[in-house]
Amino acid sequence: MLKFSKKIDYGLILLSKLHHEPVSASAREIAARYRLPAPMVANILKQLTGAGILVSTRGAQGGYELAHDPADISLADVVRALEGEFSLVDCTTAENTCQYSELCPTHDPIQAVHRKFLDFMSEYKIDEILGAAKPFNTHPAPSLGNPSIGKTQ
Amino acid sequence: MLKFSKKIDYGLILLSKLHHEPVSASAREIAARYRLPAPMVANILKQLTGAGILVSTRGAQGGYELAHDPADISLADVVRALEGEFSLVDCTTAENTCQYSELCPTHDPIQAVHRKFLDFMSEYKIDEILGAAKPFNTHPAPSLGNPSIGKTQ
DNA sequence: TTCAATTAGCACCAAATTGATACGGTTTTT
DNA sequence: AAAAACCGTATCAATTTGGTGCTAATTGAA
Ligand code: FES
Ligand code: FES
Image (cartoon, rainbow over all chains, first blue to last red; front, side, top):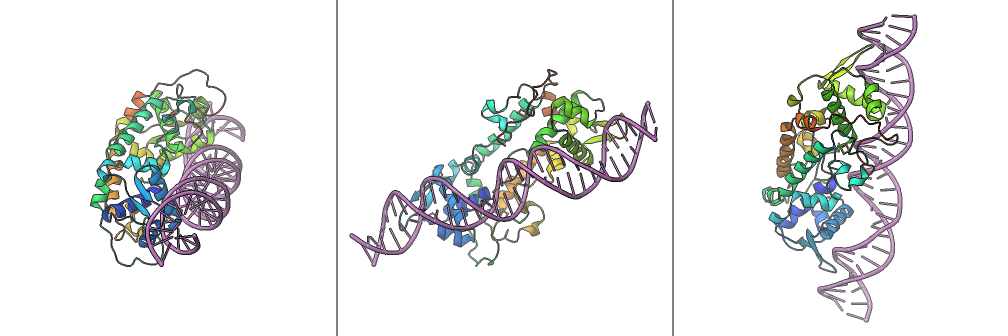
């Protein structure tokens, strides 16, 4: 479906936190702060680090920080980091996985749509998201559920 | 994930067929023609009809036809018909499903992204897709697999 | 030097979604 | 009547996603 996975949703929240409070923060800290599932947060931070969006410091007092200015990070970068290369359909990359592209009548136009989606996400820098984000509400969060999206995903 | 479901992928192929050969065609005919799983094709056509994108004629010699000019049908219409109202995240509609939008720091900016995706798809009329589509290759298709996308979806 | 905090890298499981199928019912033409 | 076709819905298997756990490697500090 055309929907952000929770990974992306959470990831943006985490990036927002690291942007507004640029102190090296540990995965556990952040998870507790936002009442997100701790292991998920850890995994997401690991993936963002692997993609070069964050830098990590190991050991005691370690944690994560933004590696670049958010104006240099695109939505496409985040998506790519968390769920792999964006493909609206499978036949975008690895042309060989689609043995039928010659036959499929809509192959070419769908490629064009794919490219438009990709361009949009590549030009959409996350400073637009993080900049407009609320610096975080320090109220004690309600003790149940997670702070993000609803339940029907 | 941010990917077209097979329903949408197939759906566009079917619409392309109905556009290039505007003769009322039965579900079975089309499925055989494109070597797509017949019951899937039937379901998709039913959904597109329910959404008003196609009109159906029942009984012997019945079938489906486009209900409008493809220039009047948007990609958003097709997506909505086949997988329900588009939501990049759950908290776009039914504000109540997200009890945390007040707390979530990225809620508002993500809404903006959602709206941009939706606008793009609403302005993208499918005549751009169908018009550029190959009128269909009448070669006998290879006898295995389906003509659409690869296997790694 | 030892210990605790913390990231790194997997491997794993359960729930939700998707892809695909099946079947009985209704409408219409022949 | 009978056949062709759509309609509605229910079901099922495969995939993906959401979420968890564990062990190793690294670092700062007591
Ligand atoms: S083969 Fe790629 S869209 Fe059909
Ligand atoms: S509550 Fe909607 S994006 Fe976080």
